[in-house]
Length: 472
Image 1 (spheres, rainbow, N blue to C red):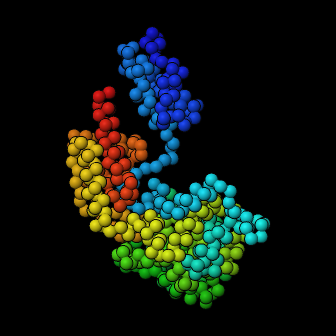
Image 2 (image 1 turned 135 degrees about the vertical axis):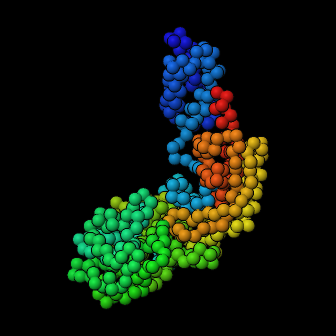
Image 3 (image 1 turned 45 degrees about the vertical axis):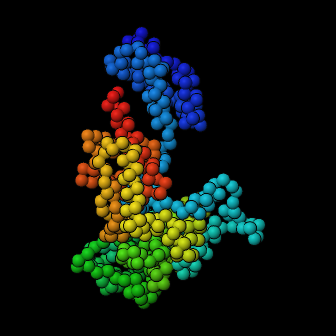
């Protein structure tokens, strides 16, 4: 065994052989060295287990192809691009909304240059980072004031901590929702120091339920939009206008957590009614919280709009510094909101809106092209066709609504479906798709025009990797 191990090349020999690799030239040398050592350690382990017995198999020439592939994979960033062929537009596990090109440029500029983040160009003195988007939010929503924090959970937390710490907030039992990441309204409320007073039944809550719960320790009435599920059948919820009137009677503010923020009317697309922020403000909510990403199509952020007297207090809360947004989020959010000043421009330029609004005919054209590319890249080894299917908005929005689409259906034939799916995830870039009825299904709705070739190439590369595995 010892004599066999002596045939392994040294680390320096391997590094010299990899020196001309363009993919590794920009990587930190320490990282490349670490990956080389890891590969050579695996070779030694295979020798000890008797899996390698021929000295020729340990030569640099024999090891180099697999070694290069292993080092490249080990040097890849953990956080990287993927191809989303699932048809879920706002995919919470894959970065949620894609930014508009103008927002991407704004982020790049904010990162690469100094900026007036907290510098007032008119006075030459310290300014407020929130001023860059506050006027836009007031104009788009009709609210008196606005504030942006790092996500909607933080928005709900700081609102409740400011307005109701140590006091009761009345919420319908049917609105005590949990969304992704185990974010639960009762738990966030508890962290804020507010006391939850739930009223009504799971499926029906009446105005009298709220009124009978009001007492001296009541700080606010709160509505939570059930953005990630729908309750149907024998149900009843109290509308915002009714709750606003009750709040006026007892001098109580009304808080509305919309979750997934929305500024456009989706009814024309057949998606039903999703409350718009500006409508909720107009109906009298004192404070409204919603996400900057998801359906809005901007960066992850928690947006708070509403009456100035409450927003002023929230802005002064020391917690605000802990949950404030950075310059990249500000830059992306401002660029995104500017697009909404022209609704038609927003529908054309904000990727999330554009993908949601994409017609079935347009998707069919892209699906046919994708299917042809897959056949070319895989040499006809896979059975490829198209069929009708559904996409989803995702991000907790429109949970009961499907978007009609056309899927590219790929049957692996003699190849294991699970092996093919796994090798697609190991590709560069990884391709994520759906598995339905013993086939891979690719939805072109969530693949950009320049990504159709990449998706097809990913399938070709996965087949090649499977071939290599079988011949090894």
